[in-house]
Length: 404
Ligand code: DNO
Image (tube, rainbow, N blue to C red):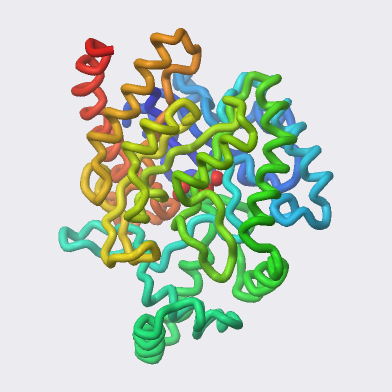
């Protein structure tokens, strides 16, 4: 298992020096400054590789850019509208340029409009740490009363609707503004940061585009890019929806094991693969993460190890981001399933037996507090997560290798 670390580029508050000191072996990064839909040019890719390869004082870091997260899929491609054919051609050019630069793993997602969604970016825990949280009542208050989306009220059960009305009535203007900002924060480091009007405009564009159509567009996209990726020696991996439920009346198609099984079967080649994110998928009680790793492991090209604590029952629930070994996913069992898959690949002689893994998100602890790194991406909280995961790995690996 390759221990990787997400780095947002030269503007990231966490330096390459810090990444090396945390013990990570390679870097996950993206060209966040390139607008979605445009080509990632060889020179921009080379520049990022160079940034990754050096410490602040210019000495070699020994780190390389191993995984792209994400090469974003444009809204036009997801909707098959506007410039989607040009964007698709550009996507392919970017894949060729990445392959040329020696990068093999490319993560993306297919969530309409917003990437991850939270209601709190710094929710205080009893020990003084902060974490990201999704509170269903706050979210309903946002959807029904702040965004005032037509039809929103009908998407929530009566009791929840009443709670949301009460919650909204009791909120200060400042809290309402903060909540809206948190929900639309979108993709960290992305060029797009949406205003409420932008969100309304984007939502309107999806009118009439339901789950089946979006799934069809995903399969169309993969039918174009996955065979090319295979030719280029690349592995594409789709990140799950976060949270893994439809929100804001938008369809979501990569939320469950059944979704993944369908999409893998639709374009049935290894280059069409999975980013198994235990944090995103773990927000649903019916996603069995160790089981998914065991059953879909063959196509898992990238692992995001993170944990959540679900606070309410139901598929659409409140949750917060727990410590990596805390929360509702049995991380030891998931690690065991991942190492078992690696042993299986090694026995088969697969060149890609070692799966890149990153400690996904972290709580803000110690000097992270008040430092305002990208939400979810503090230095020390992630360092702790990586250290704990590495401990699990070192403990389990020899046992599993011996049994293989
Ligand atoms: C959030 C991340 C996501 C992820 C993208 C991948 O922290 O897990 O933003 O990078 O969804 O496409």
